[in-house]
Length: 481
Image 1 (tube, rainbow, N blue to C red):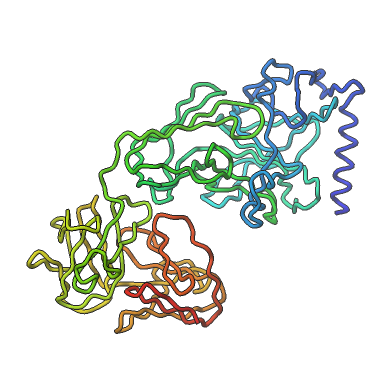
Image 2 (cartoon, rainbow, N blue to C red; image 1 turned 120 degrees about the vertical axis):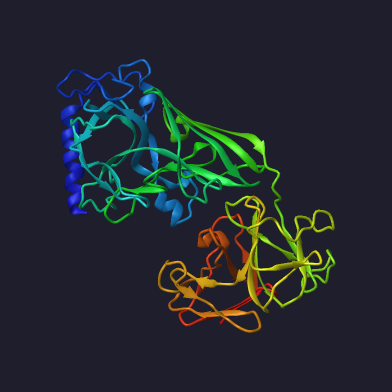
């Protein structure tokens, strides 16, 4: 705290050197007229920027947004408005290579020029390695980047002294490449096709994004993913994603109908909050004919009566339109079949030549051996797969996030059990061919299995070390003791 006090005093003294009595601030290159800057705050200007000077008639467009600390939203679960951090500012802005820019802080009638000795280095994110720039703020300094492009500028004045500034990471200038992540790619990443219209206007497009009804997605930087870290201790992180209404760190964007979508994200330089500079359009180009539900009925599953509680409602595979799964104990020779709706209209026993793991006879499906099976019905891929079930734990309660490493024991009665290795949150899933573990996961709440389906992360279920977890898929129940 003592070092912070000395640092802030030096900033104040330097500010006094640059601030004149009439509110104009000089930096050796002439005076700054801030009379046309209506609101207090930081402004990004210079030869590298779309706005060259605060004297420009459109200088208000250079105004930065008060920073949103992702840590407050993620760890303390504060709403967006309450996650603003005093002294933290950010802006997306196009910068030209090898040209100078600076940040001007307007406070009433006074203005202070800030810059930094930016060092090109690997930035700390939650995604792939991202090469960008870091530095410590210096009054009266100018800055440059080496490549032209859209950048995310994030600065923090450390007004509360809470940051660990060992790395002098008071300002980050990070290159931005927008992608989409969500229902169209299993929450992976699809980079957009960029059209550069001007330094003030850039457009990204994504064609034929396949999403199920209710599918969700966000825009996020291809490499930094969800956030970028300012300080060594990780106390301040900036969102690097856009959600509903283009709010940084906002809620997922959802579509109403299943089908193919064309998505457009447009950047137009604007003042203030980040959402002011962005807008998006999501257009349904081809509505899906894939079913949104799937059921299994048979001698052991409802006794061939659609209104019987024993009929199995298969779970949608996350981010895979038209693909459904379930895990059930099936007796050898006991017949069953499928239908999208709970009615005798459109029922079926096979989808194509790649069906595997069962036999069709007398217009019904059967398996040759009694056992616990995972049933996958993929309408889009025209394939039904029935295979011996594999159930796994994953995450903190088991020791790592390595998929396929912690198998449940499958018992003769069709139940599965596992013992946790450590205290932590319980995560478990059934292996479904061709999908990631989280696309077929579930958990136990009040003794009942709840499947994630196409939803987001489920509520955490804390367990102790050496806890025994038992799941009964046929009964839809689970136990932790």
